[in-house]
Length: 53
Image (cartoon, rainbow, N blue to C red; front, side, top):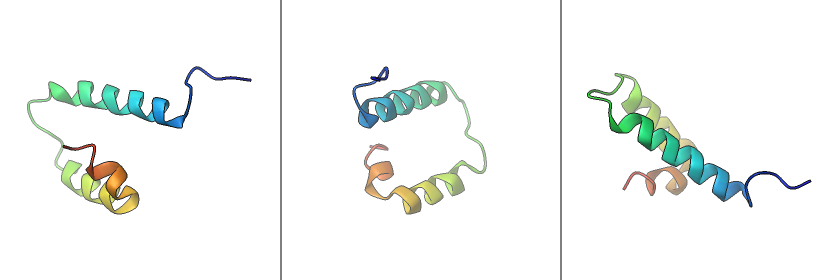
């Protein structure tokens, strides 16, 4: 059975863009976001940090 996305990368990109759109209008970020970003960078390395640019 074929899913809605042609591959995992397409699904990941959609989630990334949705999160980016959601956070674009935030006037201030959560206090824990810096800590969370550090943990994501450790867990996912370049897959996470290259998307931040």
